[in-house]
Amino acid sequence: MGNILEIKNLSMEFKKTGNIFKAVDGVDFELRKGEVLGIIGESGSGKSTIAKLITGLLKATEGQLFYRGQELLKLKGGERKVLNQHIQMVFQNAVGSFNPRMKIGKSIEEIIQLLGECSKDCLNKKVEDLLVDVGLKGEYADKYPHEISGGECQRAAIARAMAVNPQILICDEATSALDVSAQARIVDLLVHLKEEHGLSMLFITHDLPLVSSLTDRLIIMSKGKIVESGNTKEIIENPKSEYTKKLLEAVL
Image 1 (cartoon, rainbow, N blue to C red):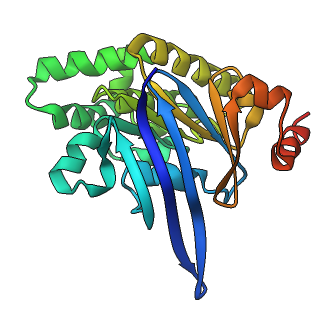
Image 2 (image 1 turned 180 degrees about the horizontal axis):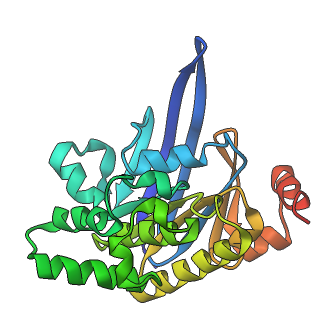
Image 3 (image 1 turned 90 degrees about the horizontal axis):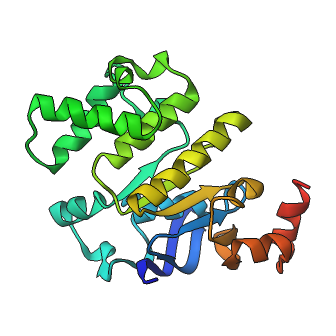
């Protein structure tokens, strides 16, 4: 299984009250094709910053990012925009990620049109197919974000992310705003999409038990650094770092 994404010595510095704060500090890891990699850590550990660096929402202070061997940080403008279609992100606040004055279907249509010309009939069919693929009825295209539940809105956000046929899906705390049953259903959906479309995924969360059934490998982060990484089952059953042990103890 080859690497689809490689991260080398990635760092991100912020100025905070006159001091330099390293949100991400010399991080190295790879995402293999077809796997789900979990990035786990408490708030402020740097995990969400990594997602924003990969998708170009933030600019790295130092390091390299390779997608299929091509360095992302050296790309500019249109080149980066084209490549960004292959890497899509699903955010924590699904409702807030949509334009509140735009129907769900229209929001998804806008993303589809990034790929080129498409007739109105073609657009309607694609939107319906995407919604059905994430477990929603086609009629949800005519609803506004505030008219549906949080779990349904997160499904719609996943449908929108899938509209450009991404190779990598980054889920940044994508289930943390949902209740336990809705979380489980979203995890089941992600497993289905991974198998159906051959996706590679980064699943970012502070919830260690949640990832046990979804991820192949885990990265444990604290204060901008990776403190432990490896096979999910091995880390959960035999954690080596004190930080990982504390995370597990907190939920047992």
